[in-house]
Image 1: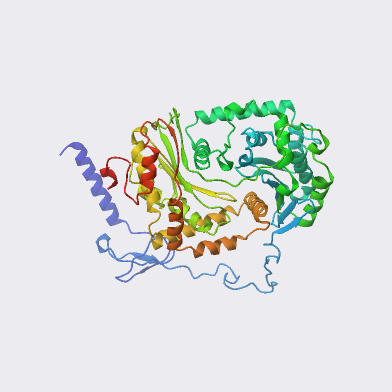
Image 2: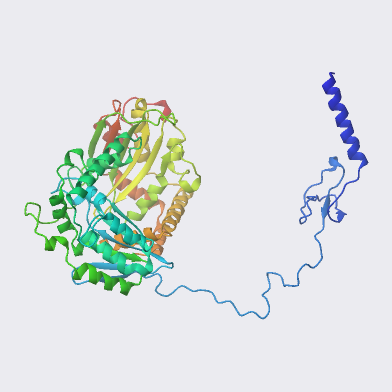
Length: 559
């Protein structure tokens, strides 16, 4: 035994002798407990449990003090001589969406909401799907040109200054079938924000300098998308182009590079003249007085003329709005290119593929079951953080990302429009696994038609309900929901309606909508180093083979 060991042994003996000679000290009075109880020794409450006799006998438990520290009654009893509490009750019309239609067809919808601030804006029946007679990219330009100079505001700074006086912010977003202008501002400034929105949508000057700046902004955004590893915006354009070839929803949302110089002030003004018509608009407000909003809308949207009514425009452009219904075609759109990598994260080069089928419109009876199926498929990225609330129990996590280490993402999407829809799954993996990735995604699409388990179905329904209610906690989301629903149907269905519809969904509904999806021709979009992409005929055969793969050799990995 060395000197160090001998020293440690002496210290241990000294420690034990100190424990045996000094009495134990307690902060409060102690009592001995029975043989089947054990105290915590903290002096807080009485915690019972099994005795550990090998540690010096039964433990002690502290008794709480009986000393009176206050003469007030306990919290379970009301205080004397206080008036009875009066609790706030929801107003009878607090959950009612009021809709007013003016003589020119302009609709005004509002919903009361507690708070000092409100959200007011316009939802227009406009977007890339209506650009068949125009150079694709007009909506992309309009998004960049929003809240610039108007007849009554000389430049963008004047608009922002007007908003900032009342603590406001503004935004413009375009989708494939809608264009939204919105502002959140102090609810006492309804006059100001309504005047501003009317000028932005009906009286923009669109100077040559602003159009040139917008062209440069669009060009820069396209270059940025090409240098980013995230491919979702590009892939969504590609899968829509494959699903609706050369018509309506298949027209690009992102401005093609070749069209940058084709879009000028004349093209934009002609588009605005026919697509910013009153009958194609809904002015929605959340947190505003309905009658007050209607009065200001009449003053600034009806009494004051639009700029295209006072300014002579060229007659060279289209004279009407395209009213074509979307025609689902299915097909393949692919691009063999080099995709940037995450250099800092050390991730490999990835290829991306999207497999899709025709879905249903948001007015279809199968819309809610299809939304439940979308949540059931779920998915995300391999490195997503979170738990069950983020869909970690969804099929694309448990059956794809957790089983195949080379899959870097697998996500389900459900796009719903007024006359059709698109359901698809986006996956990414290294180029050498392209064929296996397509097979894995194809098998998951085929397995959608199988009967789901009760637990899986219930979890998906509850998750969809919670997502719906959590999103509607946000005032801007409520504004968009009100505007979009009134634009399409003329009224708004309450969240309670959708909660009940989700609750009604059963396993047979999921199987029915899945079989409906699989009955349509598949759509495929692929981007990256896609040398290993299977032929379209093989993909179609695999998706129609009732689970029997026709994509080549049988892979033991999938058995």
